[in-house]
Length: 217
Image (cartoon, one colour):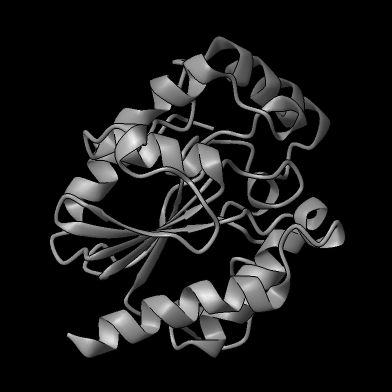
């Protein structure tokens, strides 16, 4: 497939910036040629007031389907919660063609390519951060950011030019981050929910707070 032109906020389909991830992508393409197997673009309206930042595409989730959090357990919990609090409409069926739409919400990732064992290296997080910076810059109405997990939290702070000490990660914490409010949540992974590190109620409470804050102003 020919390489598509990249926007400033999205890497090229054949992005070479992280050699380990590019090699992993090449292996996945050979093994599963009908999967997306490319950097996963942000999903949702750039004019949204809410941005959700995840970690990276899951191998059999977004890396397969091409839409963030689509096709794995984390997406089941995330999209059900977004539908509950009015940040999405339609029916989530774990397919990019299911017709579900985000409402005043956008979803992106700290790292746009799937990493081995779902664990990006620090250098890969740093290399991919300019795409997150540009994503934030394209969102002229952005007011709220939800960081799913510590890595998403830390790279979002760096993208905003803030120090970690100014806004330490904690589930349910709300920070003032420049002109934005940053909301922390544990990542909605199957591991976190199976071990009860994160319950569905804990997760919903984060988005209930975001919804209430956006509705107040």
